[in-house]
Length: 139
Image (cartoon, rainbow, N blue to C red; front, side, top):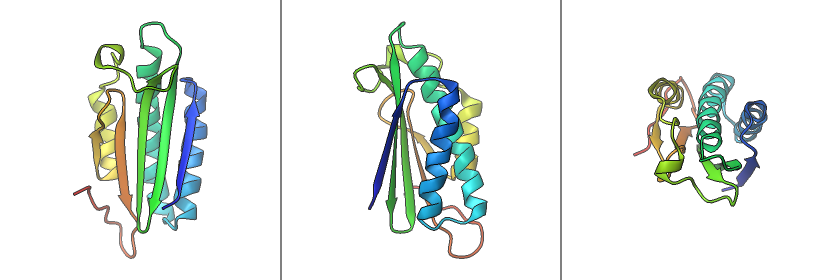
């Protein structure tokens, strides 16, 4: 179960880099081109939410933390808005990160998208397809 971590300052231009890393990990794990598009969309939304949360964190500098885990036929991704120290943001620090449209886009693209333990963060999961285009939800 290889794990890749990426931590970056909450700037919109770094979201593209995060998408590229996620797609590279997924491609290496054997995901098909149709799923790579879904991964790209969901990761972009998740990182944009985390950037928004980290930027809104009471005037402090922040970070976005992305962890990707390839576990057999499954890709799990967690994206969190964090404080400068790398700790996940507290509820009162993560204002503006709960955009319903963004969550809907991630849910549609990933097949599963649930808020993680920390505000401004999400956990996404894909199951590698053997045939067809069915994404399995977390269970």
